[in-house]
Image 1: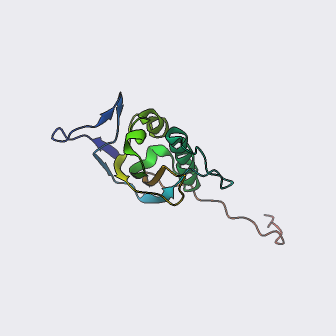
Image 2: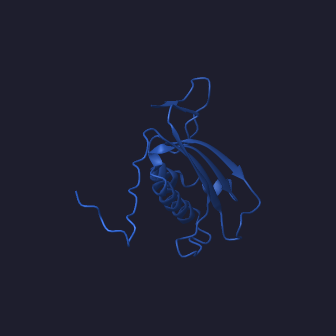
Image 3: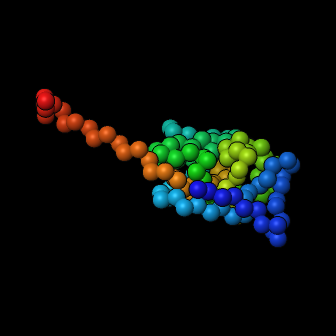
Length: 152
């Protein structure tokens, strides 16, 4: 079970009409998923959105969703993100892009301003931690090609 907590003693940051992050999330989930920092590269390795923070945020979101899916998780399972940006003012002009990725119950979040990222065209990188509250379905074992099936 997951619980989202915005303690009344802590300021809730809003950008426009969007809550920027949740201060505290508790869970009793048995599976934790750690996603490495995702950058705005597509599956072919192309840099997406040169000079366009919104396009880069959305590409990073697609990459995070793909990584989560590979682990049997979704963005609803994300409890923590760390976002690295080269221009925080530009980043905060696009709260709708983050909301498009994470929905109306955003994860806890830390945003760090950096001088640069792994490529000079990158403006944003996000890593994520997710928890899966139910165990993912076990993958079926592949039958060996040369081994005949047993008949009963």
